[in-house]
Length: 262
Image 1 (cartoon, rainbow, N blue to C red):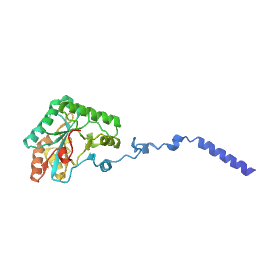
Image 2: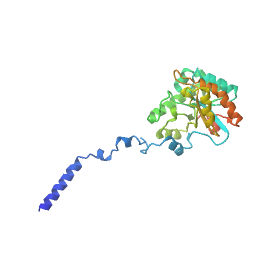
Image 3: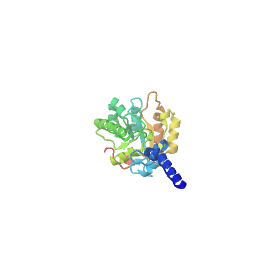
Image 4: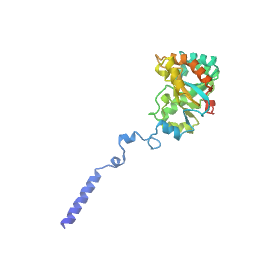
């Protein structure tokens, strides 16, 4: 009788303890786990390197292993620097790719038209240069589509190529890029010219890293107080040295065998 009473008492205590634990407490991961989960896929977030492998046809950072290189210039248009870069490219008969920021294009439409008129390729670099990786998909879409509309109104181009600011993007955004027929383009050679480096440093950063199929990151626009004189001064030497090494300069549509416009 005493054993039976003890068993009933233990059962009652167990039931009481279980009632104090809510389903949410059992099912919910802690904050650290939540921060690593993709909102759409319920999978752990991937690094940029992992995203490149998983979406290799959509996410590019270099071209085929042939003696071609692509010069790319971010943060355009900028009346302080973009015309100087365009003048150098024209003198050396080089075609490049320019990634346009929508808000800047609205302020300087004549420079966007000049880039297009002189035969350079145009890509989408967002509307106002945010960091995308921690933003939701709707925000990303709005930035890309708004800039696309601006560029299209000026040039007739709906850019197929997107370069996310700082090279950062998350999987939900990349999944939409793939579904929508765009490509994301990063780089494998960083001039680091945005740091205000001098001619020698910019030149060294490019020439030491450039190789077959390289996509070279430079800037032809910047924020208040930006100093891109290093890139402008180094550019003729970079072109001359790489040509002597047997490289051909091409825009990204030729390097990656893709189209400029969707």
